[in-house]
Image (cartoon, rainbow, N blue to C red; front, side, top):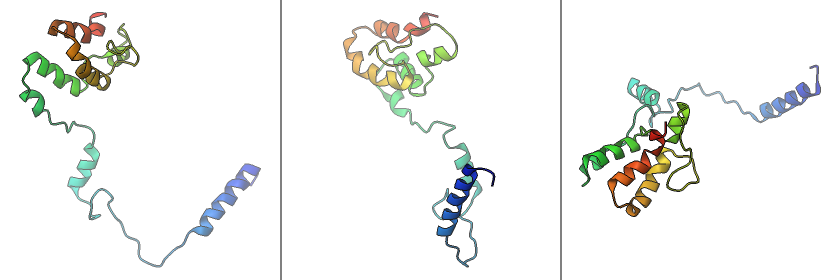
Length: 140
């Protein structure tokens, strides 16, 4: 040991090892991704692909009593596919970064959804709603 830091790390390691208790039981392997601890190819694929696809059930969007363009827009918004300010900035497209409705936060799809629900009652025409929601896309 050549430095005080190495000596301190050695002492910490020594303390941890002194608290460790070993037993004579044979080692076991347990797969933590299943409830019974047994590995299966199915569970491995499930773990590997977790989060790579949406588990959102969109049937309620398509059954809603609304125009087709509004259903489609809502479906895109819930899938985070709308060109909101955060996505436009990644592409280096000019746009207004702040949310048009609240004027305080960065415009993102998750942020836009509650604002859309809260503020859509203030708008009389669907054209006005479309204009507000696509303001960033039109400014490029």
